[in-house]
Length: 114
Image 1 (cartoon, rainbow, N blue to C red):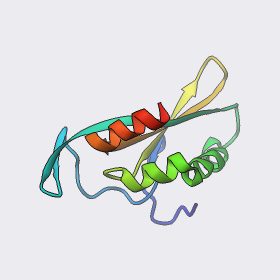
Image 2 (image 1 turned 90 degrees about the horizontal axis):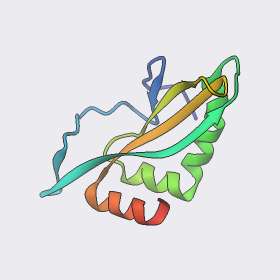
Image 3 (image 1 turned 180 degrees about the vertical axis):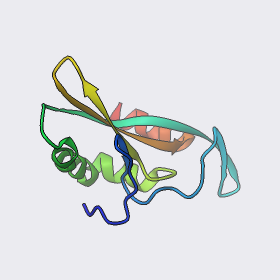
């Protein structure tokens, strides 16, 4: 995964270029109104490491190349975003990947992977 062209802050980053449009609760997509759902599509933890973002790249790439990750990357309204949180109970980090999906894609995702 190349870092070039990826926008990120200290605690979050997009899995692709930063979106240029802002999504609302309901969006018109291809002449139909769709409700937009923000879903946690992947979660993993890391131990106490010096640079957690470098160690998190491997699980993120493996998830992107999996069936679930490829489907989410294809059907997400905008590029999914990752969040890093300090996990005080394990003295490590928790990473969460969230994506915005249309109502029909959200239903499919929930039925197949939840």
